Length: 401
Image (cartoon, rainbow, N blue to C red; front, side, top):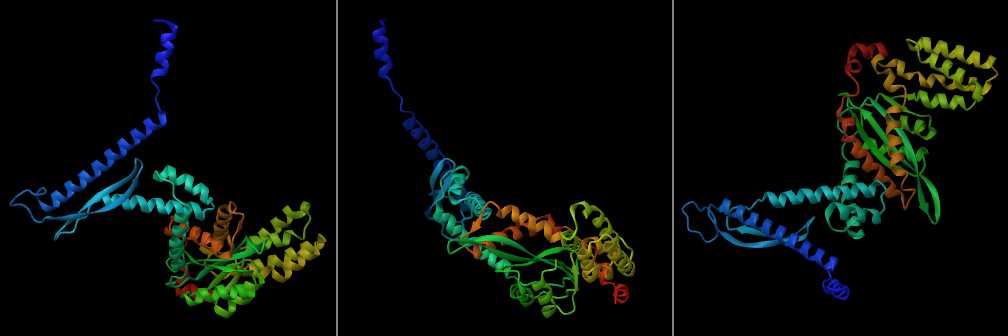
């Protein structure tokens, strides 16, 4: 065979790889569709007690046609012919399985979007997850669906008493008339009389001012928050002024960690370590009276160190960090700081960092609320946080009074 003949045979057979792949995909899709429809018919025969058109004494029902359902699979879109029966309901494991699959994919879409993944990236991911590319309009529709669930969760009734309530806000960025401005989302968590933690509320507060906190506390009160004995927070003036209006019987615990940071701003870096040890000695005392005495000693020591502004702050505000001494000793570590809520705030910041500036306050609120709802459903909300028996014991109540 000559070299010219070999070259002519090489050009005689050409394979269109794309067309061949298309034929294979269609063959697989058709096979999946045929198999699923066969399974549906078999399930209908089993329910009826006989095959279609078969005369049998065991028959309990007959066919009444079918209806079609489109389902997406990794092999492509398939058309299912779901049998209808004259009297018995036709419940198929195949349809239910795909419904569960669709629901899980929808939840994944929403979770990705709320976590700050761009719509285009969501479309790319769904092509890998679902086998087909989900449009931006579908993502938008799913967002509206989940937003309704989040709003219902945000406005649910608060049941039971919550002796301990932690309050704080997280500052996010939003676009406003071509500018980027700050917006606050206010968050409340509580420890109930059963010792479990709950996310009590989340709301948009344009600023962490008096009116913003009034609106949020009114929101909590209207939904049923009661039995509050101690509010733990930083020294936000709006919060401190608004809290007594709605919970007059509750005492206020200034977060110890935030207080330390406030004092450190009035000390040089070379003295921060020494000042920290002095402040920690105040909160290492065995009771409130000893802590007050130690507080006075620290004020005197700060003045001898020429840290006048730090001394003035400890002298005038140090007592605000000692309220927890009036509560059970086994609760002191958990209620003297706002750390339980601070950890959640850090998680929210991590989740929202990828977004940058939100288009509006509502989208920021929805993302934060969605994350909080997820946290509430994890071990965080299912593990007992405090043994509340000591607080609810009348003997302790008399001692604390």
